[in-house]
Amino acid sequence: VCISLVNAETKVFEADPRDPNVRAAAELAADYILEQEDWDGNLNVIFSATKEVFDGFLYKIHLELLTEYELIHYHVEVFKDIARGMEVRSYKLGDTRRWRPDKQFSRKQREMLKKELWK
Image (cartoon, rainbow, N blue to C red; front, side, top):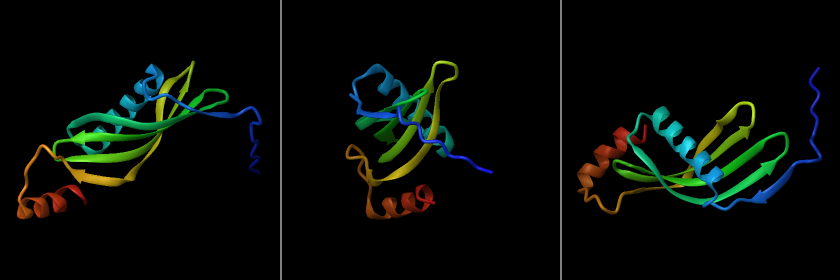
């Protein structure tokens, strides 16, 4: 038997991307994604964030990763509680993935990179 309880005390707030907790959650998620995808890169931008407050904090963050060849948007969820610290709950590819503007690729190079990167 599965019983689902909804916590009436859950509150959702807009979170400031400059908040150190939001930044730490975004950096943890960026490192996690880069490790899972076996890419080199780092967190580039935090576009927006919300914070759900209940028994802990659930940060939902829209961020951009800077990788060797691309700028890639992701939507991530990072949970934080006092006992366990922070952990990445989920991540999914956003709707924007573009070539880095500081890199110049020919059409042929882009096609080869697409095959390699977008498996």
